[in-house]
Image (cartoon, rainbow over all chains, first blue to last red; front, top):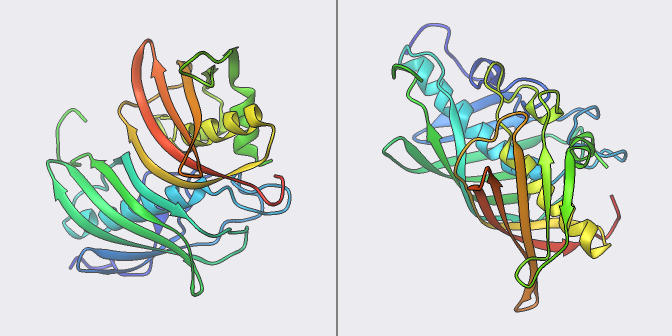
Length: 149
Length: 128
């Protein structure tokens, strides 16, 4: 453990995304390949319509960014710069609920596997006890130690 | 309508009518100032995957004349990054399978497939 790297931690320290495309606020917890991140999107977000309703595509981005925050946290713990990751695949992402600006959204991710620079991640976005979306994403992770990236 | 979708719609440059295998096709050019590039990523702008999917849902809405919501991404592959100023063709096909309202889409840049996905859509109860 490196001094000063403790949770919760602002996602802006862990992922390369910046406003307005940064949707995750805080990485709350990390445990054995799993993590939970928090988001409260403001009414001014580009993802909200005039009634404050969030575009359902935000859920997909929340899962991807939550994993990125988890990976960034691990990079920091290892003394590396925060690496980049890119969404390369989605499987069976079911969207079952609706969210609004101001909702406290928790995104849980679980690392299913990693291989050859790729990670397969299960994720779910919840509000209170309600699951709003869940599915599996595949991400390509850029090694922050690699040359020429 | 949210600001992201407004930006997507404003980036459409050309439309083609449907064919026997396609419901329709549309060309987009996302300018460097497109809102979806803002913060994604600083110094390395890449069109977010959610923009690509949103564009297809919006096309399906427009074609069908009904407000739709994305019920599921059954599968999606994002094969190559899309950069500012590139011409992106979106070709899509809507169909009904086992009562499900599906949309298959392929995105290409310079004749090369850069993304493909299959979406499940549902009629929106409240128009956006």
